[in-house]
Amino acid sequence: MKTSRSLFVRVILMGIVGLPSLASAQTTISASTTSSTSTSSTTTTTSTSALVTVKGSVVGASETVNFSGQAKVSTNVVTDPDFGAQPTVVLSIDMTGVTGVGASTGRKYVVSAQETMNRRLNAADLVQVTFPFYQSGASPTTARVGAASFSLGYDVGALKLTSASGQIATP
Image 1 (spheres, rainbow, N blue to C red):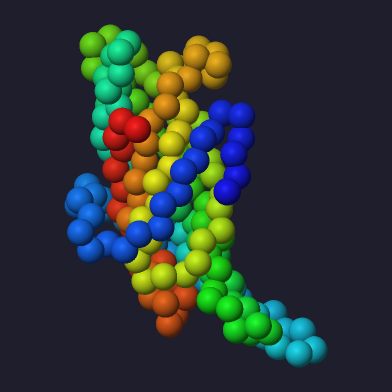
Image 2 (cartoon, rainbow, N blue to C red; image 1 turned 180 degrees about the horizontal axis):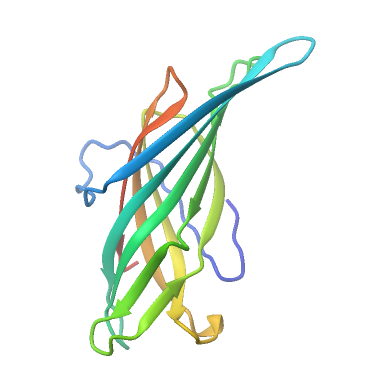
């Protein structure tokens, strides 16, 4: 798990059964597959990206901020033919396409969160990340923290991301 100065991430791997439903999102998914061969084996990498519509509110002492926009979720699923390990997903979440509006002041808030992490490939994956946000034009040192949850579905046989939805909430 990668932690930067302005981004705190907590990642939880869970099955979809029994989870509260995430807000439905319109998702556009595109995919490509490449193979590389060494002298002993062939590694397959399947790249998939999705633009996930997210929305929700972060409630705080200063004011509630209502967020909406699109997060870019990119996956690279890599096989391990040499040792037969479960494929690894290199997951990137870019939330810079998400913005907020203060409920009481109407002020605009920006999100500068981008995160990359490694996950094991499973048919269903719930990823929760926290992200910094701050008033547009203000210093990032004044950042508050929000939480985003992404429900991801994979075709394990084809090594592709097939569905994604997300929502934003108070951490």
